[in-house]
Amino acid sequence: MAAAIPLSLLVLLLLGPGGWCLAEHPRDSLREELVITPLPSGDVAATFQFRTRWDSELQREGVSHYRLFPKALGQLISKYSLRELHLSFTQGFWRTRYWGPPFLQAPSVWINLGRSSVMSSQGSSAPLSTSSTPPTRSLPLPPSNPWVWPMAGLSVLLKADRLFHTSYHSQAVHIRPVCRNARCTSISWELRQTLSVVFDAFITGQGKKDWSLFRMFSRTLTEPCPLASESRVYVDITNYNQDNETLEVHPSPTTTYQDVILGTRKTYAIYDLLDSAMINNSRNLNIQLKWKRPPENEAPPVPFLHAQRYVSGYGLQKGELSTLLYNTHPYRAFPVLLLDTVPWYLRLYVHTLTITSKGKENKPSYIHYQPAQDRLQPHLLEMLIQLPANSVT
Figure 1 (cartoon, helix red, strand yellow):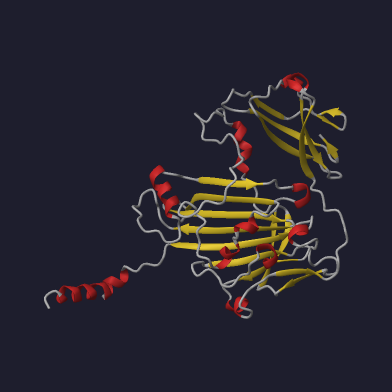
Figure 2 (figure 1 turned 180 degrees about the vertical axis):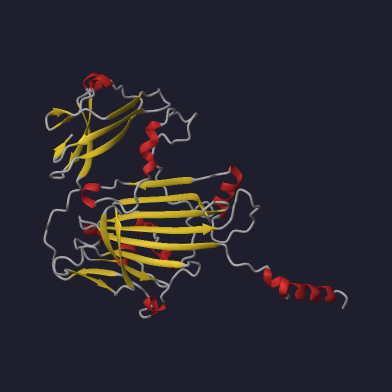
């Protein structure tokens, strides 16, 4: 009986007014998004984005409990006083000429890479390369993989055999601090995990431009993620209202949204998975796009600016490295900042550099060249060039 008294007092303490104060509201949140974009070539691009925000200063607070933020990444921030982390793995090439600009753009800070006076890994934190070839193996398994989400919501579509059977695959993890107020006296940590894939419509769609979630991922959406405060699917329908409405989207979206992205006005159909009526009506959500009539075989629009590089000649004496910059705009000239790296084992002679546009010499407004160091750093060439209208430089 004496042992029961302390136990009852403990229960009263836990359930009393002071005990309720211990149950704080979660300081982390999760938002998941999927953007589906039909490309001019007939292919389909799908971009997943999972955003986790945690109102915790990991470098100051002794954090021992993790809810949504991956513990492996949180310990990395605390142990090494990490400020930012950007890690990406890409298989394939984004074909800008046929697919247009990607939905997720590369960071603009890359243009300042060549302005660093130190390019060696010993004296600078700037990366020497932005791409590599990983070994042939599957995605890492838990607990090392931060892509471990409850199998609900958009994560049910992350099926490996479908994601790697694509023309383009890019997976990235981004961590950065975010200010909570204007003075930035306290910060939160934002984890953004992205996945971009391009499905070949003539393979997955058997030569047809029609597509659906099931055709691309072999799965449909059955329920929203119970931990997500926002779970949405965006479908780019910018060109669907043209050509006498040749396309039909099923089911009807929750709402539509317009925004200017990369200078182009876009229209998106929004499917809110947290809307109970969106999934409960059919027990699953399989977004489909069908053509009302066969589209005309028109060539996809070519972007105004695109580049091409090739090697000609032979040997170190007669070998040439050529870069072609295309400006297909009929009347507008564009200034272009060209940043090029060449492996250290190739010998470059700057006095042989020639730049021509429309048969005439084109002098760059700015040029910076940094020679390579054997086995340490590549050649670095940065130039600011004016591309005339409708020209090849």
